[in-house]
Length: 120
Image: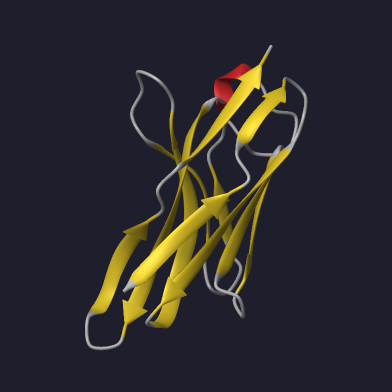
C-alpha cells in the first residue's frame, strides 16, 4: 500500500556530487520523519541523515557539512544532496520513512536501495 522509490545513485569521482531522491506513494495519511541510511560493503547499516515533518534535521558526523537533507511535504519526497564525496561514502543508500496509513497506523517503510559508488 505504500512504496518508497529512490533515484539518483550512480558512479562519481571523489570530490564530486550526487543528489538522491525518494518519493513515497500509496495510501498515505501522514508522514513523520524521513531519512536516509546506508550500508557499505562489510559494514552495518548506518543512519546518514533524517528530517522531521517540521524540518528539523540530524546528520551522521561523517557527513556533516557535506550532505544536506530536505523534503517536500506536498510531494511526499525527501532529497539528499551529497557534496565532496569520498570513497568512504560508497554504499547502498536506503530511504526510510515513518508513515501513517489509514486503518493501519504508523509503520516504518523502506525503499529498495540505490547504489552510490565513489571512485578515487
